[in-house]
Length: 123
Image (tube, rainbow, N blue to C red):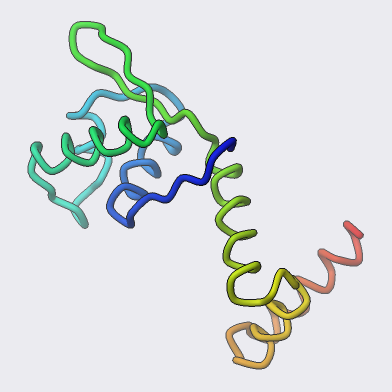
């Protein structure tokens, strides 16, 4: 991403629906994709879409109705957010982040073993 873009949790939910679909969706499709956990009114979904358009995170295409798709890949956004998080809270050190996870017992023994195996295979 060229510039820092921050999205709210609600906006993130809309993006997740679009990323999962892998194709442009209209507002009704997005609302339906939210599932039972988020029964937002149509106007709420449209407001979130407008915010994302204004931020440059979505683009729209006029067909019979407007269709929307993300301008940024999920992996790209997560990579940028992760870097900002590590910079902010761990002085840019991924090692400090990993140490904090281990020390806080946020990782199970199985997860630690999986991470060790991952690093052994990929580093």
